[in-house]
Length: 219
Image (cartoon, rainbow, N blue to C red; front, side, top):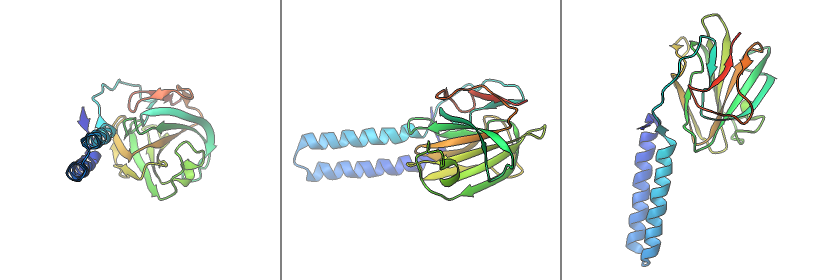
């Protein structure tokens, strides 16, 4: 298992802070049992930070050209027909995947295509499953155009705990299904907007994995 590059400095500095706390308690606290508890808590907390930035080794299955895979690990919390005011003028199917702090937080492109739009929006930090988080929270929007001209929007959304969205998308770049799109730190959500003609292959509350789980098939 690898550690994602976004977490290397955080893991290093949290380790330094926890060691400093442990040493301070060891020096100034007269109760050995309390020192042992402090070291244990620091180690557990540091382990959770390391776990958050993990990149497990996975085998990515092959898909057909019209297959749309999940851009994130997590649980499907919403499947609905909506109008999104940012890019599309027409109605689309939105699939929302909620990522808890326990999930792998690497985001991946759901399909092959060219990046034709990218925009970052500062915003609020509502809980990620809130219906309005897609338009009110801090977010980053990327639109892909497939070889046949179909456009798909992917939106990274910060949640109540998340405080930084990282996106590697560059307009004009051609990307592949499963390639890294970005990273959201400490709990969040990813929305994907599909044409109404897409055949949805997931259900509410279904657990999905980025780059692997099939969300839909384009017509």
